[in-house]
Length: 249
Image (cartoon, rainbow, N blue to C red; front, top):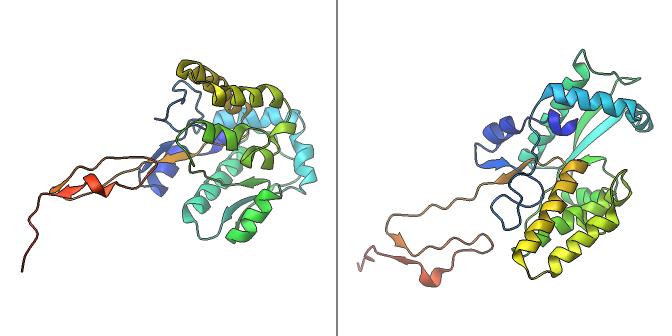
């Protein structure tokens, strides 16, 4: 329900000022291994209500009761982009509950957006203390393994912190095996096929809400020459030069 209730277009247009695009799973669009035909959620209140109602028949109300009908959405303080994403999420959930076709919780659900100082935020994320939180990832090396690992392998960064391995319907042995196979294979075509399976599995499981990936851009004067874009590194200035004469006075 949350994935249908988030207004991706509004976030990208009004918060990012258009400098981003909706994220399509754990592997960024444009990177080797990304599956272009991967299913993407969109803002659809009717679908969100349907998903909410199904969840209510499967025990969601009991889960909310265990939370004392208080849902807190966390972000690191000072990060206004994340704050506004959390507020949009709050608006979306409240719209679902307010819909006349939705199944009401047994008690009023209170939703709060909470800011934490960075050190406290990291500590609580690492210790699995936050029910819903905004996160991000920048790669350490240019390979899809550095995205599916943190988000999908059951023992690594975010997958372990959200309890992916113990979530209903998730086959950690199978998917962790796929990740190992993809990392060890030297056949690009085989790797792409495996990464397709991994991405389909995690998106179908709806363990995450895939919000956006940033748009990278570069600005320079017309007299600059030799710039080569590299998504993993800063400009290499040895081959970067100016055709404009340097003043001698």
